[in-house]
Length: 238
Image (tube, rainbow, N blue to C red; front, side, top):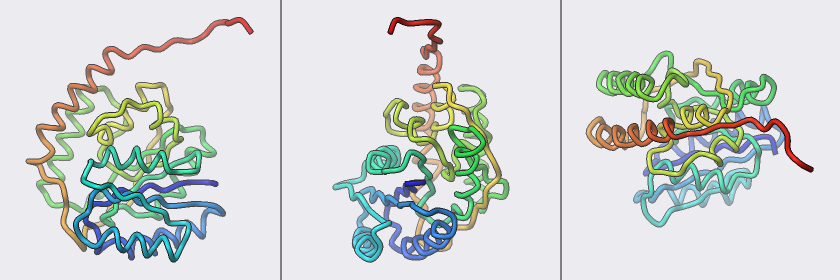
């Protein structure tokens, strides 16, 4: 299998059908063998029913449904465990990330030697408050943990599964994937990607529900980076 796409969703019944159709058009054109793993993070709307119908109609689409909300980091881990391909792509389920960006990021990993190819939103389609909070968040993360990529919060990325498999597991780790990959010696690259306005559904994130927990996670990542070790083997017995 060429690539597995992992999409965490929480109460996104208005976006699933259109996103699945759009994704399918791109993937069928660009890849001979692919799959999409949808992870329902404890939705309370009709998300699960739509995923059940989608999976029954098209076996390339599979799903996992959590009994209760566990968070985006847990959803990514569950999707990785279920994925069959050595290369993983991620996008959000709200329709703001463009599936058409996946092939170019995939080529950077497959052909150009990168381990993780990150998108950055050159023209963000969010309100002023979210743009400012993201700008500040990216700046603070870079200042305290070191430069990895310019837009850590962009969910459009493609990476070798080892990048996530070997990362420490904690709630909120999805906000630091490039930093955690760089800490482990993986090669990062980035490119501009399309970002679209949300036209259906409601955002699950706000400054209030992200600020303090993000700061706590940030200090945890700083500790991990400070205490991280690396080595190169000179020789060993057979």
